[in-house]
Length: 134
Image (cartoon, rainbow, N blue to C red; front, side, top):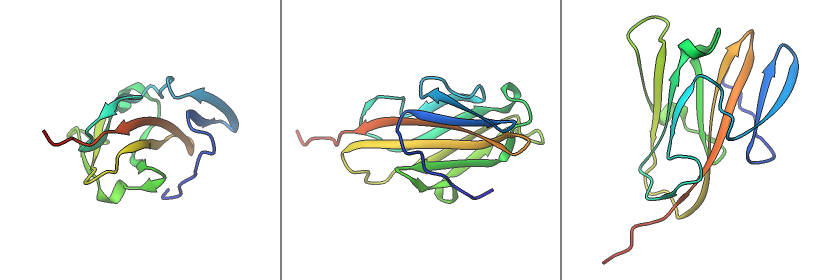
């Protein structure tokens, strides 16, 4: 469950379903992902990297399997996780406080088990621009 895999090419999402591999561009999110922050392709000051998921949109999704990576580093354990009060949770938000992120391009990835052991992944990129002194 804690196993992470790197994706060699940015902008590509691997979805493994029933032993088949399907390539999906970053603009095609798994249906369970409602929102990512910062948005894909955005630039600015970044204080939090977060993902909101709605598991009623995905069949057999496992909320306990959600993992968040930032620049290839698993930050799930350092993130805050909140969800709906039903069990298993029908919605979940995972947020990582990105302290002192350096300026420049960054990559985030969220993944979760989407049924029968398959993992759904979504990767997006954004740019951090530091505040300038006035």
